[in-house]
Image 1 (cartoon, one colour):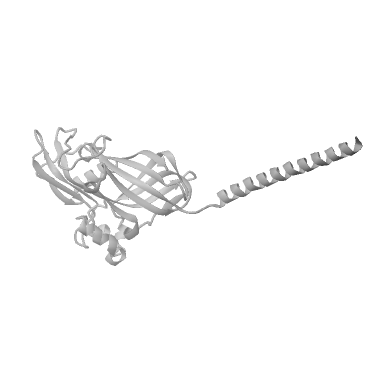
Image 2 (image 1 turned 90 degrees about the horizontal axis):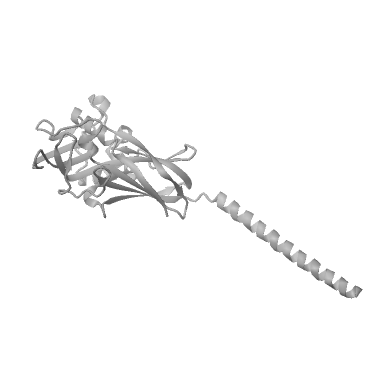
Length: 283
């Protein structure tokens, strides 16, 4: 009997040691996994989607979708383009990641409704630090500091802008926003073209600076990792063009306006209020 009990005790001892070893290994693996996850700072990617519409209803159809302004003026767009640049992501602690700031060749993009796929224009950003982002900020147009780098400092984007009709001569600079179409009271049958942009060196030329930066809250945190690419869906309400903070009416005096006159200052200020983040996908 004593022999049997001794044998049983040894078996229990071995079983206990086995379970203690397994438990220790499991806890060690968990800690190692947690440590690896905490140390994983590999960059990832982020997508920004722009959807242009009226009254937050997307997918403007060029030459077809008609909107009536608060002043009762009907209008549509045959051309709808704008430049975004200096995209900045703001994390939950207020830290900022600036994506190729003041580097148009790598950090400026043309949002062109003619290139929309299913009503969406896609901008894909790469090499973004892993983080939880709560806000996005971007420029409408090209910052003066970037423009003053000179043509050689942004030759790739300058050529892209020229090809897209989003630039004048180098001395004049970039077209920040290009809106063209038809307008009228009963029917939209009169052509208009409003091209907003800086006139070269605004300080030297004593002209208004139409570059604006817009900061938007994300309704859902963008949780970016190497394996999760958040997609930020931005709606642009073009109803703000004529029906924004300053109600505007197209007429013979402003239907063909280019540069930065007061009408285009008002247009720019209206358009800075057209953006909002509709939703965020963490995929």
